[in-house]
Length: 260
Image (cartoon, rainbow, N blue to C red; front, side, top):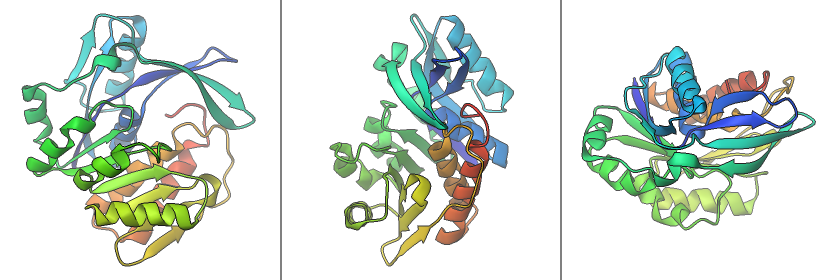
């Protein structure tokens, strides 16, 4: 199982404690998949500051291939995080060098050596998804909670597994999943926070709940769910079992501070 993740990374800085943790959707997904046994690579940009060094070393230490991380003159992206009880709230975001991210022809060829490519809404990798599909890659993409973004319509024809973040199982999210499937997705998935998750495969909906867990910090919960689901799909598991694996992976993540 060979997976490459492409796009944003950031240092999550917790305001109250000043503690910093490496993160960003593609980074987190790569780390979680590596922990599950997949071979992974991350392709993105960091700055020439200390955060860039920390990011590269941290990802390397987790076993992710970092040979395609580029250090560019400037700052590594930073997200300021505030904890409200056990839930994380995102504050100011400085995108740093990732604001100008693009892929070279050589990097696109490198990505073509993998089985699946994953990115997210903030990663500046969406223009390349038609090319990923041309190269025969399986694709997944995290649209987060940006459900009104134009890319929900324009990008989903090139995404096998689109993931959305919402709050509950209702007619609105069900229709959104149906439309994503009609545009070309294999399975469209929504994470619903404390209300679990929901998937649609073109024939039926698959709601899945969450078990009782000790919530320390919800940072990375959605990313770890995505990693679990992707891993299950590449292993040939049923949709129900993929949702279960995603939920179990997320349950571990919210038991500690930081994404990983």
